[in-house]
Image (cartoon, rainbow, N blue to C red; front, side, top):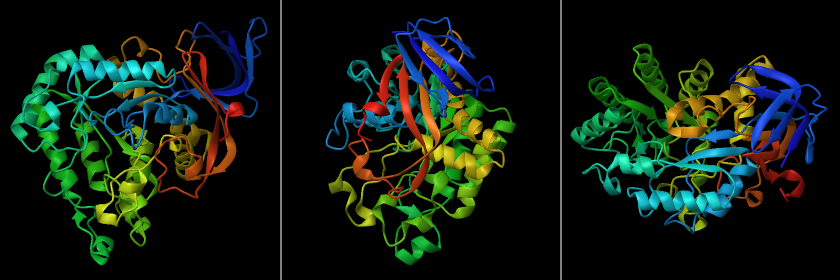
Length: 439
């Protein structure tokens, strides 16, 4: 199929391009980006007047719930949610059931995802077998099966010796290790330590749970030479430690979730289980530091932390409810809102909002993207045509029942947000069109 996207505002954070252009696509790749392409024989035209034409979004943290948790989410529903949100590539953690610690499981997941013909799925392999923290997995075999890195997901690795050996092994092959910094014993609470948790009688998670883990990770990185991506930083102190580590030249990157970027522990209100999240929502000073860290580049990427949860697990007392929220369809809009809130110049805000969803996540993945490395997260002649077309001026109200994800629980229910996706293209094919949607 030959596609011509006409009259759109093309924004490519990788090159700094921000101009009204046409984009011509053939054989799944971009063949031209220029004003008024008249000599291209397109089989379909897309009128993007008033819309932004951007690289497809890359989400570094989205649980698809298959295999093992199909009652909370299935590949069909969650990948449909991804393309409806403009996400063309996503990274899924290994905490499925069974855990992604065998090449056959990874190959099966990728095969089933490819059959959906929607977003590209990049699995993380388990760092240790069954995530138990004892024996390392066969990282070489898992990489050959399609894993882009290795993680413990939400399971802290209590044994520092095992973590050190894992980092040494990963470093010897150039693999990335993805860790959420949380000390195992201090991190067992359900809300951030503070006045609100005390008043509500909820067990607290102190900031030290994150900072102690960060100190440990950085020391082990120094001795092993490993490359580490930190998942979902949540505190001001954590941001400061990451900034210091980067200044020292450590090969570390990190991300923050849309939940921590917009919400605080005060949003828990009267035990609202929709706010039962991991990591827990912290105080306003932490949220402000996270926002600034994303502005100045200390934090590299913004993630949805998409974790669909069913009614039985969510409609429980706060401390008993399962942590998690749906987020794939909200990622772009919440990024646009953050960009507008933190930048006086609207164009600069939109450019940075798109950068932390496209160019920067692609840089985090790097060589793990394989043949897509040169194309992911950018719009350029010859690049694979993974594209999101959205109307930045259109506003919509978050209605859980209208979300495509099987998980309907979100802390942003009822929010009015900017940015509506009109088209999502994956490999030059239309994976989502609002014209044929009931959204």
